[in-house]
Length: 157
Image (cartoon, rainbow, N blue to C red; front, side, top):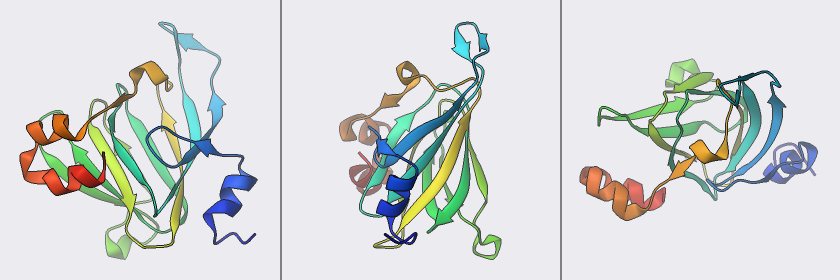
């Protein structure tokens, strides 16, 4: 296998399927807890262009770090009800950022714009990730809140 193929990284990093879409593996969980939660976690996450990171919400801030592959386009519905797009990648001249903060309680999803490619990133959360804080949405729930983005919501739910 060649490193330009998603399967190479999925195999080398021992990634597993993630409920939001894509593949992941937890690489760090600090054993110190605060109020019953690990104080920090980190994962590798790979998203092939054939899949999307479905709209979801977390209760804590999450920082995404670009590692390899095509740029990753993020779609945010902020807690204040505004819509934003961000691009994670390695070319600042194209508006790409090497890291992106997803603020707590932001509904967000992502996709790789380029066909037949993938994006490899790391995601860090403080306090650490817990699946009970992971909230997914139906198309109907989001269209009701953000009807102007119906076609995007359909793609990412």
